Length: 292
Image 1 (cartoon, rainbow, N blue to C red):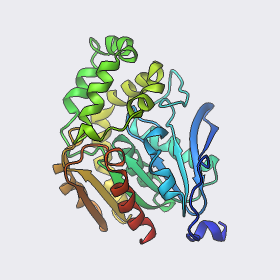
Image 2 (spheres, one colour; image 1 turned 30 degrees about the horizontal axis):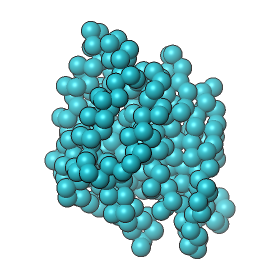
Image 3 (cartoon, helix red, strand yellow; image 1 turned 135 degrees about the vertical axis):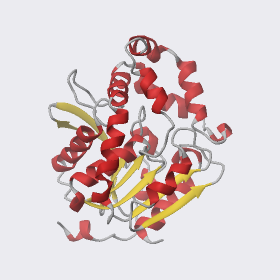
Image 4 (cartoon, rainbow, N blue to C red; image 1 turned 180 degrees about the vertical axis):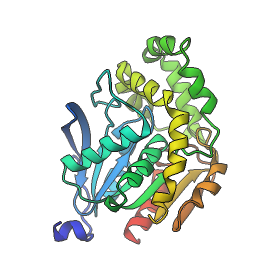
């Protein structure tokens, strides 16, 4: 590992256009990702039906002192999928680790939002020596009841085919769902919905999401069983007090799973703090990672 990878370098603002769009093949699947900055590696993991667009305000803030990677997980965003791809939590975590292998990332910090937070915890449990620290933004976890009924409903044999057929065309449905992710919808900036919608015009992200949903409850049981393996990893846990997707009250039990856990509750904020209050979110992450 080079000396530049081992320690944080001097401040260097990320210039406009410095975020690179890249691609790599993982298990024969084309994977799109963005990269920016220089220094220790930081990998950002989006939530379900998200993609690297989620991090457009986070990457420039953190790439001043770190090398930031933001992949579209296989099946999501502008990455490809395969008909037989296993989208369980463990398989997703293993693909993340192979992504790191392909880019020769020996160790990194992991920042995961929602389902990406669950993937981060699973990947860390599989190979704990490769993760220095985790930042978890409202991570899906075994103690939140939000979503358990909905995932069972959407993955049922009667509902799933209709959902897959109609979802890419129902912009009004996406807008309704997206607005519910905010504590204050007035904070939704122009162009935000269009940015999230762009890859959702294809069926593949919804097929990926349905595969994730089918193993949701089983995956949460598996996640609960492996959490003792990550107890020694330092964690920053960030939540919005008005989160309607992952219950903020579940943070109490989740915090107790880690020996070192800093907790930040953002009052009046919903499920996407990096969208709703990006400056506050970036400040909390930078303080945790860089000691600002």
